[in-house]
Length: 281
View 1 (cartoon, rainbow, N blue to C red):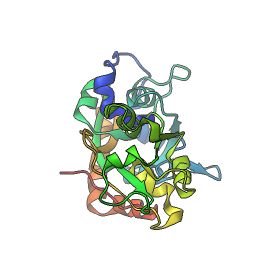
View 2 (cartoon, rainbow, N blue to C red):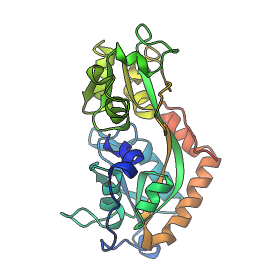
View 3 (spheres, helix red, strand yellow):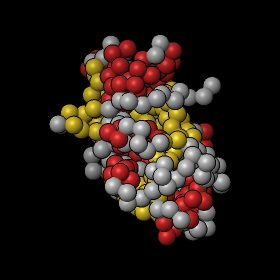
């Protein structure tokens, strides 16, 4: 998904202009209404998506647990991913979309990255709650555990359009693999192509890959692959609030710290069939 491109954004885009924006509710206001409004990505399994009309996923369960720790209930604002995470952060917590100007109290699934944070000084990014990484799901008959990305000079690999894996394979390596890179609208579609034998592997975010291939058991091994030139293959995801609402970040940060320590977050990941990768440090 386009949200992965924050890693490359420092090289590919200029800083956003600051200032203005919708008013964020203060901690006192939030406590008075009894509800924490949480921004989550739309159609983003296993983190936030709709099943039978109901919002489900890791970020949904985590948001509910966070709100409960603050003696609040959780409400949700679904967010369609924009061209960059910078856009998403602006629309979610500090300015609002130009058609609506509504903002959430807190946003989930925000890159906890120093350069990204400096570029977005209208928001406070904090409380990393898990670590994501680029991985490859492979057909073991065509791609072995010993192979590196050069295997895709002869084997077809699926990627989600406009993601880190896409940019890496089609641009960063000098177009060596372009002929064998097959684009899909999402990793779910790429996983289906792998299961049908249309591609030999899929490259993308490990959590999404694992979820998309969960019905296939251990048929398609998933894990890191040696990828020369991929300077950042892991990153941490956390929360964000509007800069003027730093007061809210403190109880949320404390709650995330406690839930990491007591196993709550790991249990949520396990509920969705995923191995929890905690933030480093």
